[in-house]
Amino acid sequence: MVFQDTQQKYDFLFAVVKKFRECLDMANQEGLITIGLNNFPKGACGDATLLLGTFLKPKKSKPGLNKNILIIMWKWAGPIAPAVMAALSLLLLYLVIWISLSKVNAAYVDSLVPRFLTLLNFKKIVLEEQIFKYFLNTLIVSALTGLLIPLLTFPAASYLTQRSVSFSTGFLTFVQIIGITGGMHSLIPLYAIFRSLGLLDSYSPLILIYLSHTVPFSLFTIKAYLDHMPKSLRENALLEGMHPISYLLKVLFPLSLPVISTSVMVAFLNAWNGFLAPLLLLNDDSKYTISIKLYSLVGSIASGNPRWNLFAAASIVNIALLSLIFLRFKKPLRHTALFELED
Image (cartoon, rainbow, N blue to C red; front, side):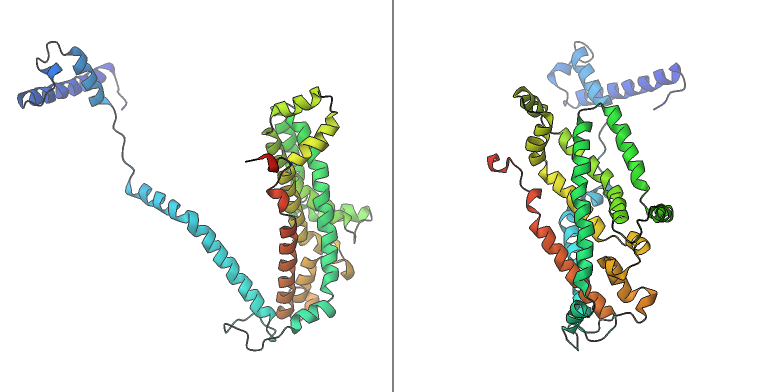
């Protein structure tokens, strides 16, 4: 409450105390008063003061109906949201599998199982479309991008953890700004630069662009991980005579495998699913990545009649290969060099 002047404040307090006095007198008459206040106001200053403080204490408001509803919805959303996401993902996977097993060349599902069931689509994408050649091209770009990420960001993150907060913040901001240059809005200037350097129709521009996309995320993530490493770890290693580079490679790197693996996977997936950069910078069909090959089956001018069943079959193979790759290399996400010593 805001008071305009001292008199208004005095009047308010007087009214509160008067109401408090009336309540005490009423309680005394009905025999509800405590022993210490039987002779109120005589000899009851302490108890009356405590009681007045409790009387004036602001009461906590109970959460309203809307807040209770939000709390209940949040508690229910915890287990329900993942289930809904999993159900939608399985539904989309079912639709793609349905189209891949159908002889009919259309993105149309009219029954639980395709009426004209066939595996010929998978045979065509392997023998006629030579789909694994495009998977190999994509694997080369993605693997090189994933391997270069820790070589660039892990030493930089280790260095930043030893510098001041202001320096680290400024450097990370600069890196974030540099990462923006590889976006869609800058593809045309990048195309002109790579053409002047004679790098068109090669994988070098793609790797550079994907690296610029992933370096900010990787640097932020690895630095945050290293910031929580015990400082005594480095101090003890240096006291034992270990060279800083040896400490980086033999101690810090094994302990940082989970976050490094995460950065590698993000960079790998970013390069694997890249579309606009290879569409603009690659002209030779034999060098296409899988995303451009899939696009040529249904979306490009050269595709003529969209071949949805072949597109779906190639998509299923793409999903299966990515799943196998991530299942094979997921171990570092859960295990570190100290895993066997952990309870």
